[in-house]
Image 1 (tube, helix red, strand yellow):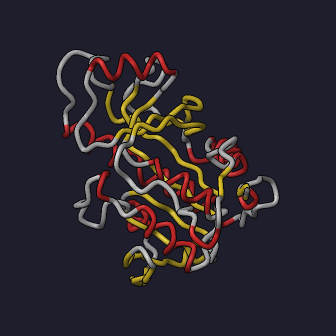
Image 2: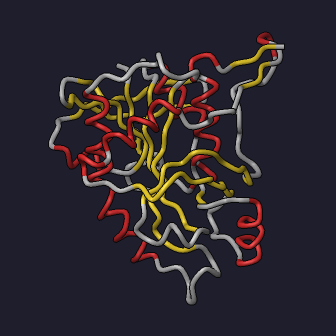
Length: 256
């Protein structure tokens, strides 16, 4: 099994029967659904749990990525609900995550803890796989998906939303969208030699970008509208059996 989708529950709408498995890792047990879709076995992992009960700062990112590696996954598509700091990316937009800034505070961020393996580092020149991102851009038109552009994602600890002052600072740093989950997920995937690409769903304008508070109902409606067509696009790309020949994701580790 090569392929996985990390995100919400949209894959269950594909009509494919799925097998539920529990994968044991040194970081904990992970529940994964495996479905046969268009000739491929696809692993689906609900980042927040199937009942969406795990807040972003409590997600066991290391267990999730290790579990996917353990069952043979080396290419991952993910979705991320984001707030927009860029007026060119209004609510309802879809963006391709291209780079990130990390403002998380207390999450385990790496598999590389020294010990017998010594000092290891990961090259983050291209954090989101250039090959998978290119394939998303190529196939989007066929699925009537319009990406507004590439975006720099800034990850906060959560679960609270950001203050207006924080958003002003993030805009000065060059962030386009803000969320709470892509880091360390993208980093851990790279450490394991996996290809990882993520689509950002702009579900709200960030604090201070519009008058009035962020509305939960608007976020839920935006996610419901977009997640199914995005997952169909992911599955279509996987059906063409992409490989790791056109990127450096599998060779990103630097040992000193």
